Image 1: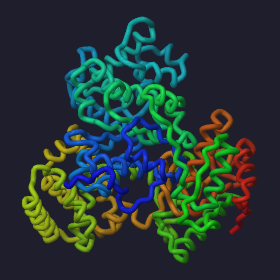
Image 2 (image 1 turned 135 degrees about the vertical axis):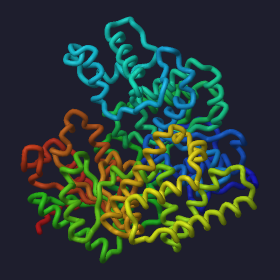
Image 3 (image 1 turned 90 degrees about the vertical axis):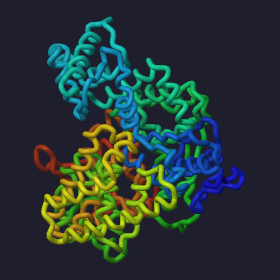
Image 4 (image 1 turned 180 degrees about the vertical axis):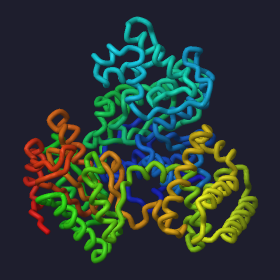
Length: 616
């Protein structure tokens, strides 16, 4: 690919970047970019990667590593880079989560672990914190019964190696030994990160190889970085010649409960000498919503980093309301009527409407999802689909099935070929043409053998198996470090199979089943934490009540940030609901907003928000 001279480079796709963002994109110094919602943080990283690759500022064979907090954020960034600078250059851009990056290092170099930490077979990843607690209970019941769970988790996830200096360290050492020598070994993601960190710290050659591979390192959603993750980053890269760009927003710091390091911005500047650079433009939100966000920034969060709305909007665009209901039934019926009007009259795509809850999705939105579906508007719990729809092999299977059964879907066909060509990096242009012809023959073969409306469960699974065989399972494992663990690849394939089979049994049509899988024309319902980094035309937040914000008095700053995140997902319209009664664990209970009164007060003081009593 022809190199672009740095002085002639322009942001891809005609994107307009504010001055500070453009400078960061072209800079090769350590930076901490602090930017509010809608400032284009992900786009900045994508453009910076494009600049580094297209101008050869990051020359072959060096790579760029981007580490994100969430899997969908990592996938989104990778796709943006691919679209901005093409298939060939984007192969030198790796976008991973902290967990997947640590797991890749462990899987690749686990033989370098010393005897006390050897993992002699494929391991199971424990996703439940309680599973760790149970191991400690089996070792020392008294300790577990007299110690809170957070303290036990902190002990378990402390840096390696273990010591015998205290009785607690001895217990920890025994628990780790039990877990690592189980058949198969049982380890958590925090353990994976500590083991990967230990490999780096005790093997200079591995560390050197890692640092020589990645000339540039991006850190996305940096405000959510945990202490363990930051330790891991420092072990891998601190002191190297790599250039770091961290991007985040302390107004959206909502992961303190999960161990986010509240001093991480200051620590990063101290450790790397990075320059703090603010971005002020809000490209996402309409002007009235930006005005509201600025008011809350100052009067709710106590900060002064105000945003400026994009000139693409008209000054009076944007609306925010708090709707008060007598009970959840009235809430459900009125929301349905309004959403129906937005979709059928205003023409808003259901996929561009999001329903958010703070937590306990089934309790706050379970009946609403059912009611919507029963009355002609599709809605679903999006939480369980987000991870699957950002896994490379899952996306490949779905695209290939669309290419087979929907010949008009050129985008799916293009994405399928793109995936295959990335598996065959050795092919020249004329050989890629041959690969394209082979793909066409494969598509015709499957289409001829199977009908869209008379498939059996086994046939669906067989088609998916043929797709994987066609791509070459070994090539997939070699091309994607995550899939070098065969169990992970098998698990991802099975997730698509099971969901597609279930959908097909309901729809009796493979294309409808695929549309159901990807959520076409379906309103996503999710928690605030799952919504980070996403945006929608309209956001409905259910439950602006003390009951939903039950922890507000204990962690007011984090809950205020959670509210801020929910509001800032909306591009044009946001609705917060309050129900005077709400179903809970012990039946219907009266609700109040006494504890979160400061939030309601500031919404009203902003002079942007309408407070409305809504009745059927």
